[in-house]
Image: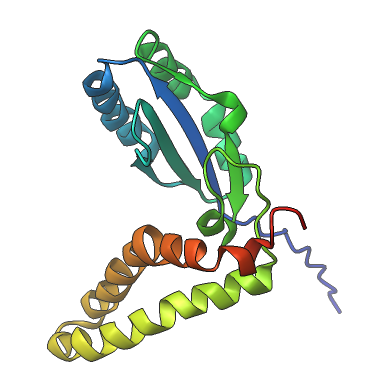
Amino acid sequence: MVVMSTTQVPRADPVTTVFTWQVRPGREADFEEWTRGVTDCVSRFPGSQGVSWLRPEPGHRFHGVLRFSDPQRLTDWLTSPERAEWHARIEGIATEVRDERQSTTGLEAWFRLPGTTVQPPPRWKMVLTTFMGAYPLVVLIQWLVTPSTASWPLPLRAAVFPVLLLPLLTYVIMPGLSRLLRLWLYGTPDG
């Protein structure tokens, strides 16, 4: 009789990190050109799940949102020669605001704001809020889009759903819900 031992390797959650950059006045075009190059480099790096660039406030501050499959892959990128090379190229154009760097895993990425120290709400509140945002979109997509794609091959039909749902949740619905439900999610500033 052969007894086999199986050891489970803990599954690491994907990680999202927000980097904040202060761009020198008049160098915005140079910075935006740099973002295209560094984004292309990051997208080819093992474990990368994409980069988004945000300019949510007026002025010269930009936020880069990097997503990696796990914390180790993010660390590999942060300590890589490729990243060091791209950082050298940005000298004189922008500086990273290191005290605003934040990393989150899972749903917390939708509930954290760059440049704040507010802790994410409890997971059950994040799940409920995400359901409130996703459910109406799922119904809408099923009602309006699914019937017109019924004759498409399954892989193509299946791709339509996340292509529509995820950007709407990430850029429109969840930021709006987070603001609308701020007091319930985070409590009052004093308590």
